[in-house]
Image 1: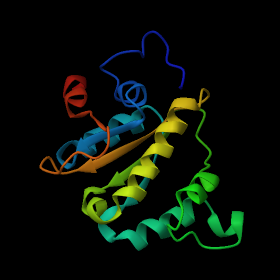
Image 2: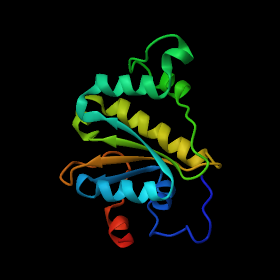
Image 3: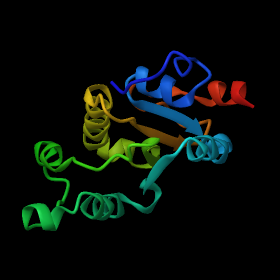
Image 4: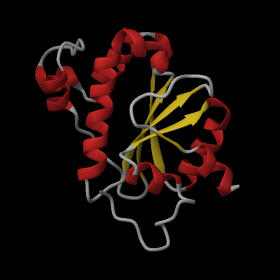
Length: 162
């Protein structure tokens, strides 16, 4: 898990809460802009994947982010979580960190829960085992959406930081 100073080890810090709670956090759409601002002020790079545009859009974005064709010579089609694990690499900025912002994964959860859960498991593993950098996923969903996986809600944390 990423290193946090004694000052940063606080339930007031979104990143600390997200990373120490498994690397997957949830924020409501209502608070997403405040969350993005908080992360940006601390040097985080946000990489967005919009699930509301459909699964093909998500796969296209995965291909782009992980330079799939360049790495493997073919286009990733969602066929295998093992293949996704093999291609799951990224450069995390030394200052700040990297956040995968997954917008509205709840819309595809019913049809693609196995794949989405697998993606979140990979995020959680990388978040827990990368000692050099800070990385986690942020699920942006409406308040009324069902929870996905073990995502920790950071709306209350965000409210305490204001």
